[in-house]
Image (cartoon, rainbow, N blue to C red; front, side, top):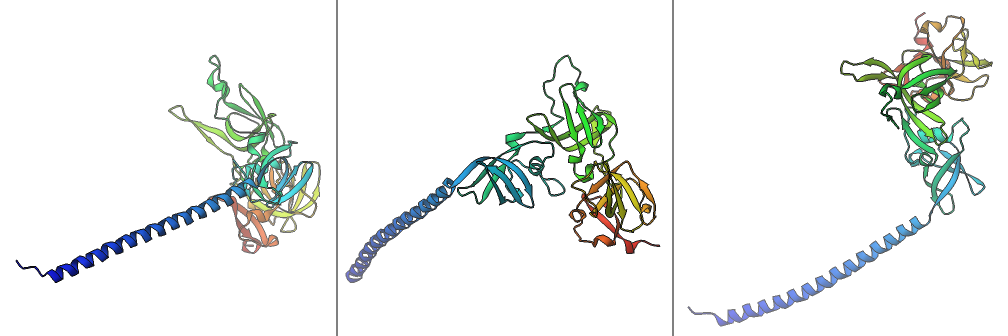
Length: 348
């Protein structure tokens, strides 16, 4: 077979150029990659340096938390008081309640005389808060179902907590190991039901301070012992009671007189279940154990049970005009919200 040598030479020359070009290309690509890697490494290093710098600029303060309201945390550090904006999501180890408030807020704003230690992370200038922990430094979350220090010669039933009413909203919870005093006014409004004077078996949870004081979060009463020996517990709620709206007329000794929005019906109610400060002229929502026929009755009645809410708008996502509302009932799908009936909707 005859080979065309010229073609062969051209092929060899092209191959040689291709190889040389490939070497040049590989070398250039390699240099480009190295430069890119070096550049990326420098960028990452710079970013890490900036992150480290930002973290280094944060300081942890051992402070005293004084109050938390409207997204503002007030605390005392090194003898100076600070009030800084802080989202409630920045609370560490927190628990949210139905009404939007939280365990941390309840701890800080407690009315049982507890001085609250707080571990707060801020910037060096103490102008911005990154986190706040009041749960860990002051006590622990507590659940009654967690039996502690069980003794072999003590029947298990003696570790069940018993309920005993002391006065107003104050109850005593006790078992073989300890006695806890709880103010049921700490419960959310929908849980402030009509509790019995005593009960033999209850389950509850809350926050236990190191000195034994307690903030109750929830409580359930025994309603049935099942065939298999298990127990069923349920909460007492306000869901079956109507809520009325009115203005505080006078404040007495643990009582308040409220005139309803019909401008003629007056209710005298106890004030042990109340979520804030009362004052004459204040517009309130009051939950009562009675019929909705109370509205527009023109009666003057006294009640031994009531739940007073000092900010009705907090429970009203629709923004009703206060003076137009007759009464409301809890939404079965959301016990923290209400279904409203306006005065104009009531048939005469």
